[in-house]
Image 1 (cartoon, rainbow, N blue to C red):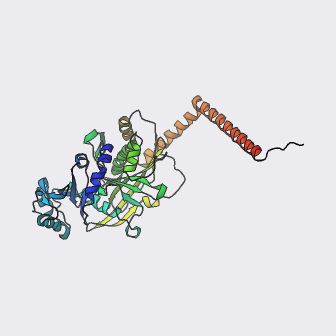
Image 2 (tube, rainbow, N blue to C red; image 1 turned 90 degrees about the horizontal axis):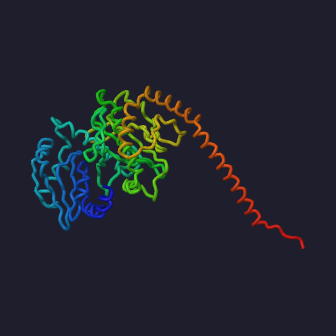
Length: 393
């Protein structure tokens, strides 16, 4: 999949430069459209996060079609305009865009709850995409985009059902929002699972479980042979991936009194990389995010916390994802964390008492002593070279 994006990026960027976006009407690039990109490229045109038409860009021509979305457009937005390959700047296409640009931003919710989360995703993406610090509710965050297009990052995991996370290959779900958070060298990826409700039946712990599943996948992707390519595609510079990654796994949900914040800052250690749990609670009014309460804005350099779980190296990415997901389930509550800490302490004592650890410790001490001796020898040689001893005549 990475090679597809890298190969098609130039042509996608070329066609993307032809148009601009409007509030609530946004263009998305899907994996299918990226794969099919060639002499023409298709983009999803979404209103409040819901696809209402397909735009097709060709050399010298751009068209808009409603196709199979006409029924939903009428049901959800009372829009009866039908387009079949209409020229982008023609009268019919302009009337269609004006309907959504100038009409009240309301979607009929009856029988269509599924798209409510897409609406919230779109509102959060719009808020996160702001570039002026004074305009942003949460500074130092930007969505990962491809060719300046919103992009639903696919995964091989099915994690939509609470407590049921499966490895389903190409039938997997997508990450709701993938962002970069931080400044300078302290910028890290943040994987966000979005929920349109915050209720006991679907608590924050369930959303965090899904976010952790997707974060583990992203970590495996970055540590694969193609990792540096994905790292750059996600918007990072440099020719290497940091030796120790910090990945944020966050849930984004409506704010309620006594919102669960108990998991904020808890960490999972995977072979030196860290997955840190976060929350993002928001208040939304009339399709605008008005307030954000998050543990992300508390991120400051601090003493490293003891990880709540330590996971050994996998035999393969597939087995790593499956095994780590099983181990991560139901471990964000306090009782599980305490139990894991006890197990880790016992494991640490067992390792330190083992003959293998003692041998490694002795070898490390010997290597350290040899290194110090070499430093002293080098310093002595430099000193003699700088101040040679003169022979008496």
